[in-house]
Image (cartoon, rainbow, N blue to C red):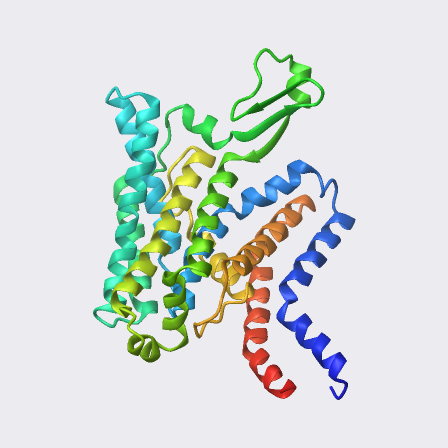
Amino acid sequence: MSNPVAKHIFLSLTRRWIFFFLAIEIIFFSIVGTNYFSLNNLQNILLASTTVLLLATGETFVIITGGIDLSVGFVVGLSSVICAKVMVDLEAAGLSQALAISSGILIALLLGLLPGLVNGLLVARLKVPPFVATFGMYGIAYGFAEIICKNVPIHNLPTSVGSLGHGYLFYWLPGKAFSFFSKPENLTRLELTNLVSIIPNVTMITCVAIGIFAFILAKTRFGQHTYAIGGSMTAAERAGVNIKSHLVKVYMISSFFASLAGVMYVLRFITGRAPAGSARLLDAVVAVVIGGASLYGGTGTILGTVFGALIIGTLEIGLVNLSIPTYNLHIAVGCILILAVLVDQFSPELVRRED
């Protein structure tokens, strides 16, 4: 391109292609689908993106350091099984539902840190390649999950689990009632039909967790050290960064988000399953890569990852809206991943040509 203005526009579009891709998705499905812009459909997109958003947020930290975490899919399953098992057993032991549920969530989140700790120690201390270490943990987490649940999904959870997982932050009956966290009382059947539910609890918890760690990555020394390690491990070490300790923490963050995704799975589906998140590993990595993170490390943002996850969620709900089998989603996601890697591969070359 000889025209500097045209070249600048082309480079800007290349760097921000995911925003245009998401816009094109929304426009396409709104034209060919039905009620795509309804509040219910938009909230379904957020719910469909929940697991991917959580896994991809943790994966962002790892990929920025130049690594990858392949264990997160089955850490979701392990966490969901632990959470559901503890809830069922504690309620059977006579504890109140509130205590059983809160204990199940807390124990699942705490034990869910162990895979990340082991991954981090293997990568940072023993110099095991991230692919090998986390792929090994992939199998270990799945095996322990199947042992705990005895190859059978865990059901019969406390009834309040469904109320929490299927609840919303706001309930609004136009012209009559507005309430937080619980539906207004004494409503007729017609009023219940007209009741508008706004912001699922699961989405709210997800957004809070992502917001906290987005701030950590963008605004704290921990985030700066994460980028430094991905940019040049040697330079980061010379700058005084404790690389071994930092990498362990990064892999534990990834494991924490996978565990949180497992808890959210239990709240949404009122069950614990060993393969609960196995199908979302590819989606999580794709969300990070199309969000602008380089597989070579050193670049990436949580905001970009969020947009990447929303692209996948929008595509999934769009296919459902059109009654297209969702297994086509895997084909589309694979194509998007290849496109993202090509953009990542050629963007530096384009920038050099511009200079």
